[in-house]
Image (cartoon, rainbow, N blue to C red):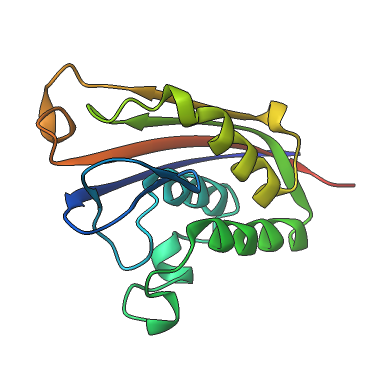
Amino acid sequence: MFRIGHGYDVHQFAENRNLILGGVNIPYQKGLLGHSDADVLVHAIMDSILGALALGDIGHLFPDNDENYKDADSIKLLKKVAEIMNEKNYRIGNIDATVIAQMPKLAPYIENMRKNIADACQCDISKISVKATTEEKLGFTGALLGISAHSVVLLERIN
């Protein structure tokens, strides 16, 4: 049995914050605003997994008014989502995720993002696709106001 989920997330740029994407600290003049580390890529991936399991979204599981998640490491939260997935007898078939950002250029960091995500999901890196694109200076990402991400996941039933 297979299940498919889609996730989407967006965060605006903010001063005095680290830019964390896929668990990688990327050198840039701004970070993303959020209650946790605002890792928009990992948030979209978590939402896609939770969606495939029909368990809502990350806001339900990790509320932004809960101080336990203030500045939380999103990779650690992804590990918790992967544990829930395993408890429900599913594993990652594959993840296909896209980061939409005009700047910074992300190509040098994508392999490390893939590795971090695969490790958190306890799967082979060959099951994780991360891509980056711009919006050709259109929309809020093109205007350098923030970054968004989409994720699609295929889950496979275990047993």
